[in-house]
Amino acid sequence: MSLTLFEKIWNEHIVREEKGYPTIFAIDFMLLHEVTSAQAFDTIRERGIPLFDKDRLLATLDHSIPTRKNRLKIFNESARIQVDTLRKNVKEFNIPFYDYGKGQGIVHVIGPEYGLTQPGMTIVCGDSHTSTHGAFGALSFGIGTSEVATVLATGCLLQKKPKTMRVEFRGSFNPGVYAKDAILKLIQTIGIGGANGHVIEYTGEAIRNMRMDERMTICNMSIECGARAGLIAPDEITFEYLKEKRFSPKNDKWQEACNYWNSLKSDTGCKYDTEVTINLNNLKPIVTWGTNPEEGLEIDQTIPKLSDLSQEKKTSLEKSLSYMGLTAGKKIEGTKIQWAFLGSCTNGRIEDLRIAAEILKGNKVHKNVTFYVVPGSETVREQAIKEGLDKIFKTAGADFRMPGCSMCLGMNDDKVPAKERCISSSNRNFIGRQGPGSRTHLASPATVAASAIEGKIINCEKYLS
Image 1 (cartoon, rainbow, N blue to C red):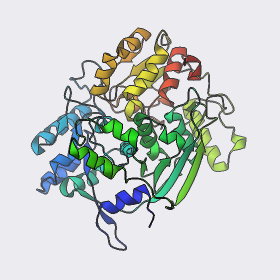
Image 2 (spheres, rainbow, N blue to C red):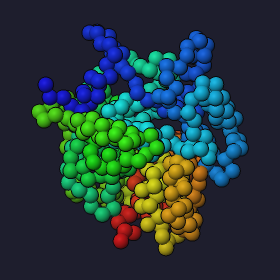
Image 3 (cartoon, one colour):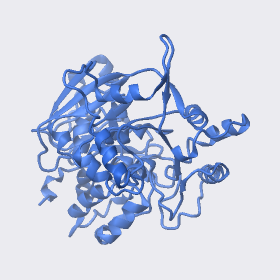
Image 4 (cartoon, rainbow, N blue to C red):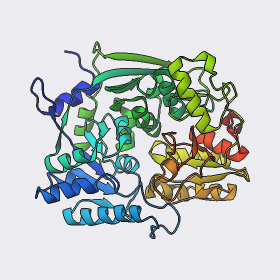
């Protein structure tokens, strides 16, 4: 019987399966952060349940923490309690913890960079963008706080088997077009609910040619079109990335692991519930104009007119335009911005910073723009400093900050003021996502950097050598 990559991983993790009931499904690893873990620890503490396996856990700080230089002092009381509570819980339960100065970073950045994320694994976290790890051929997805408690106690979850979707990215990128543009194009094409109930497997020429950071960007935003998870079959690019990582298999175990990882690909003749094809050959940089990731367009296109849409879409368009302060039928290019943000678990890796630095080199951030550059981890920050990227950012007038989720979401110090506009490399442009009343335009790191220079949304191609 021919199986998809998803089916192979799913079958290997079935603990018990009975018709009419959810599957008891084994979880190999869980990442923890300060926002969604506190109640889970309270649950197992109150019930006197021991941890199933602390070595299958890793905790860090990312969502609520400040990214300013002096980040030890947390002014927001709720954030301070979250951070203090996580530190107390990991100490009580003896869980590996990456605190400040000890490898801290966004959960979905440090998992891969330390080699904890490996093909064939099942990985969960109380965070929707856990789908990032699917770039390695790991079945990874976000869970709720009560499910975090279940994994702490049992190493398993109750799960209904998702459907499968194959997304083929055909062709190759034009100058100025990146993985972020490709995934935004998919979401624009199938909609924010287009993959509901599915696990997406990404295939095609473009995927095969992507670096690991690009694949992580693709899988990271799977959730934005409703998918449960995203998957990419591991290959030599995956293996090269993982080789010599801190927690990757070593010596004889390495070849043994590679032999297994090589088996993790969909069989010829396997069946998917849904198939989608996206042609990238003529794609231009994409920027969102509305209040969800589906509401995006290519840089030279115009915002839809009411007359072009169904009644349902008209209502959504009117609400989005009202909130965003934009006009139907107008071009998105040239829209003035006050903020720019480079970072997040979508685009906060060293490769993203290199792209932005190349554009900023010899240029200045516009006088009306505040530009935050926030590395995804301490490792990324250290590498950026080693390469001199920090000097490029500072010389250009950008604020090179400490690692964290930062301006991706409005639950820390880094917020966009009401009615001000930010072009962002993050993953969501929901109402108030970057702060109450803030207006967010999602784009690639290159588009973010180029727009920061000009003080308006522009095509980044002119800044590429």
